[in-house]
Image (cartoon, rainbow, N blue to C red; front, side, top):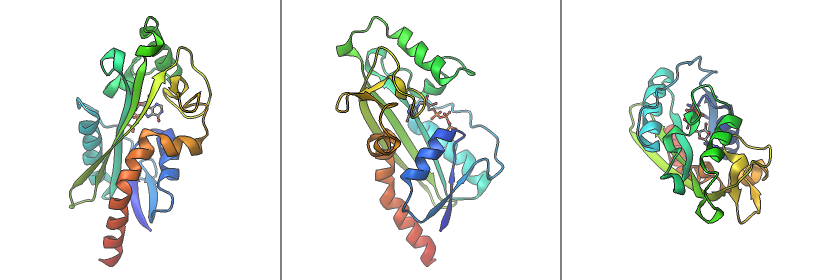
Length: 203
Ligand code: ITT
């Protein structure tokens, strides 16, 4: 098994990645296990810039192969907001519930047919001294008028999935890990991760 730093301070992301990376020859190490407490500034204008920034900051601190990600929600009728500001949309110390309420308030006059949205996830992978790879995933849905469900995290309770007739917070973790933006990005990264593991073992 090869150690892979999962460079996030978000416990929910860690739980999801542990499932999504299962079956690959990696042992997931968290920032807290590595004693890394610093928080990347996330100064980029895009998910990709932020994911790369996080990977470039955390990889040298750990000296491990590093997976960083930036993710968030884009609402069509809000011109792509909250986007890269998803985690900070309702202020720095707001809770998930505060962010959901803030979003619903901003969207209170927007009719159902204009509530299309997507979750996006960009993964940046760095192998120390060995370049950078980026993988994108997305998941499409509709912003509900009220929160429903208690699974998942973040904006899941208002992210309605028409094909399931449920919000992302009402489908099981297993289902979320098949259809989410994160699952889609990991699926694309899988081959690369497998190849790198084989090269590492042969070296
Ligand atoms: P790290 O930077 O340490 O990874 P973070 O929570 O700050 O943790 P981001 O900057 O990538 O992560 O912000 C992502 C935000 O987007 C997250 O806090 C949620 O509000 C939202 N989000 C991302 N993925 C989500 C998901 O699967 N379900 C619901 N909301 C999600």
